[in-house]
Length: 434
Image (cartoon, rainbow, N blue to C red; front, side, top):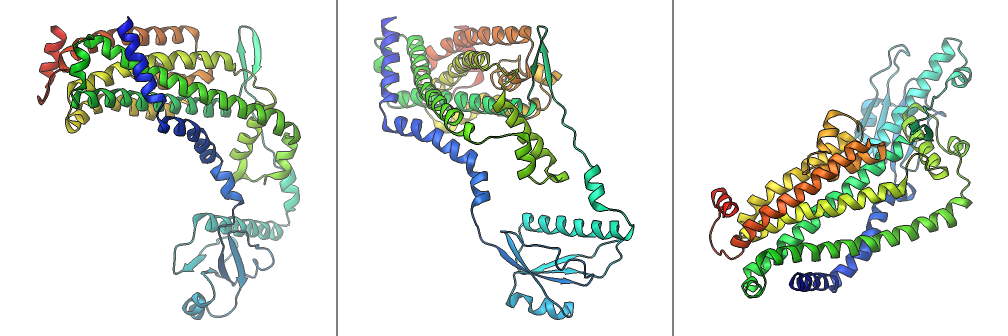
């Protein structure tokens, strides 16, 4: 036990004392925050605009179309062929609206020497559509403002009934939280598992492992490295958790109380158009969540995440440790690595489907199979998974870790001392049977 403890301590201190560990531990949450806030920051950044000339032969657009921060408009007059030949001298594009019948609008074209951004084109399309609709209503003697007043939007409020108690559900936040936890588990499994493999391969390649084996059993080396790297992962996650608590405490206490966020404010600040309906619904649910987390019980979610984090890492780390012991040739190791990496990648693909349908047959089986359960089950947790499924999934994962440790130990103790030999599946099976 003392030898394992010494290996754990050596592996842990070697990684934690590196400057790269300290720098990445601090920079990673900052980079994630910047990445998450980038779309909102870009909306406020002026990235330049394009000058668009409009030739409108219908006479409907002038005075009704407005430019935005992305483009400026100027109405021009004359022959379309002449303008097509000369517009590039003063404008980036020429928008041509022929004199069509309002019943059958069409033929609208945008001429440009370079491709115009899709956001600009979509904005112009929406404005022209609204203008044509207004003209149609006017010709039919229909009051457009009356139509707008008669329109309505329905929000379906989710209510979760559990143990006879009703709590507010939040599909959007559960969706986002499920994806975030799944991606976090993917990062943990892949990043720290490959670090275990790289460490073992490096020591085997440099013949350091021969010195260690002279005083420590191979199985003890494997367990020590796995647990040492687990300590590194726990330290990094603990630091991130503390930084996250500080950040959200600051937002909750120092920012949100002064924002006076409400549904009415959203309605006043966002355009209530059909194309914006999905964004409005998401905004409403985020406001609801800020005001009341409802059925999302974060202490329980955190405990489940911690359980899957620990045993998912241990399960995959034993597999990666075995891969590191099989060969010191990076080219050959990649062939074996794909066998472990593919289930992780497949789990991420399944996760995207599961957060949309968290109680399907695919979601159930993928959250039970140990190769995918750590990622897929975490994606289902915010959607209130039955307790028996959690127990079944967790039990299978623990049993799989024990079995993988036994098998990996049998392969590791022999393969770790083999050099220059390309191992086959037959060789690995022989090591297991020894």
